[in-house]
Image (cartoon, one colour):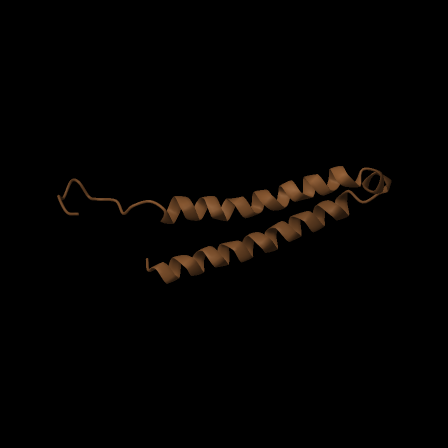
Length: 80
């Protein structure tokens, strides 16, 4: 895979992660709206921040695992 294609794939991963994280947080906010949300707002903000960070960490880790390794050699055929 060419480097430009790898960069594009990682970029698409980040856009997908942003869309998915936004949807999950919106569902979480809708499901937990009520008086507790106003009283304990800092705890809810912290939890939503953790959700967002976990969704952004996933494409970073996956791209590092997929593209950060060296090409494998076929030892059995003797090539490479």
